[in-house]
Image 1 (tube, one colour):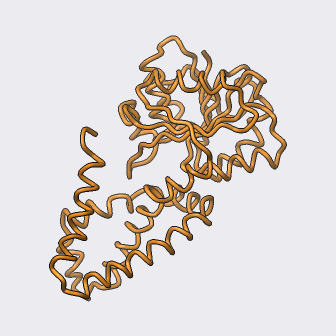
Image 2 (cartoon, rainbow, N blue to C red; image 1 turned 120 degrees about the vertical axis):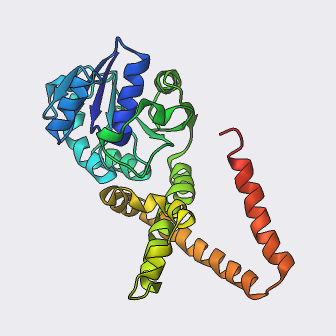
Length: 284
């Protein structure tokens, strides 16, 4: 098996390391705009060959993973499709799927593209923080294009399963709505809470001084890559804005609940949330 990576950051690096760990005989090649990063991946044994430009080395890959930021993946498509054979499964790891499917349609790509998204991550970013364990037991969403054959999807499922992920196949629009609810909106809210603190602090920075574990935990993702989240919010903009409208309505309902000073209603608000969240993470 020959596998190519375009971009080797947190997710691309973690995926490459997981494949290397489970398939020592696979040939893994990678391109990244940062040559030093590729040198490190060579030294630690993750990749067999460093590619300092997108070129002929990517011919005859069984898989090519696009692992750059969302909008950069669209630019890289124009280069990599020259080296995609009819037997290659082209994929990505971005948290937005609709935009890259549309980009492929716009350039008339007729090969095999299966969108991919491992549901794992960290507020840290870059190859230095990549770890094969990051993906273990994570759901790995696949969004096949219409022309993709069942055996090609099964081949991808086998690869994902072999590194300890849980593959699941779904429509790209459903994926983008789901990630909007469970990932994109929470990141936007985390950043907005930091702004909320800044805007309510005083000259002595009392709130900044007192901000402890609870605030740190709920705003953890606000420390994520600015470039990555800029790209995501542009790529999934319509869905994010629609969901923000829904969340604003939810906040208004919450405000109404609080204003009643009704102990039973307030207790139910917190207990319903606690019960659902506790259920979500049982045995995870």
